Amino acid sequence: MNIVLLLTACVNPNSSHMLKLRNVDDRKKQYINAIEWYFKYTPYYIVFAENSGTPLSLSDEIIKSPRFEYLKWKEEPDVPDRGKGYKEAKIHEKVIADSQLYKGADIVVKITGRLIMTNIVKTILSIGKPSKRLLMSNFGWKFKYQDTRFIIAGKYAFEELQKANSRINTIVGMEEAYAAESVKLIRDGKVDYELSKYLPNVIGVGGGTAENYSKRGFKWVKNLIKYRIYYMRHKKFIVQEIMNAQIP
Figure 1 (cartoon, one colour):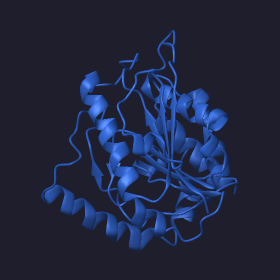
Figure 2 (tube, helix red, strand yellow):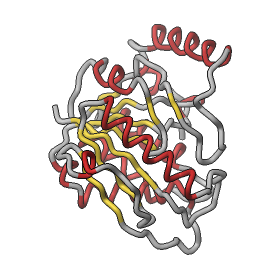
Figure 3 (cartoon, one colour):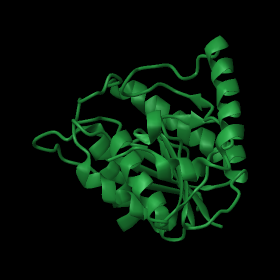
Figure 4 (tube, one colour):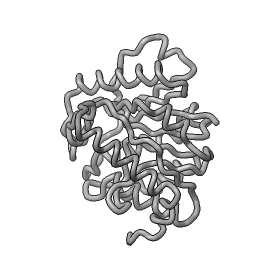
């Protein structure tokens, strides 16, 4: 199976809705750190897709590598503004249309490009049934929200998920739109949903909240334990739970 990491990026945002991390220099550093980490510590192809047309200084080793593809263009502001989630969704569409590495992919791992998921390789290796219909992305409260920072999807499932993009705006975020579309795809039998064995172990800062995910402490240990218990209890029944969820 050909696996491609899709790092979505906007160095210089032109939408400020729900965005606290705006300093361009800080964002640049975070993107570069993430690219270098994934290039060094994973064996996968990497598509870095940046929509503000802002150049980054990357090493020749990375730029010239057949494992790495750098897509860069300038997305104009939306009038009215539809928010950062819609901008990110449009990056997906651009990659589907233009990326050469994506064309050869079987599985796409969509990652918010400033964030480093240190257990990404372990998570990918834990996939039980890798296929183009695979969907692995954690849901939030009663399956009404989805952790769109990290989505592991077969190529077919990823493209089906893009049907949610037209519904994203400053009222309905990507997390809600993708959750609703994922539930629909699972209920219609179009994708094979698999609960991740691991809670994402993240280094970085949230763009919308400015939360430092890198901080570790009692709360992190508690979340790990809670997720492990959740996984053990729900891994065999999660699809049925989604089918029975009270979602309009």
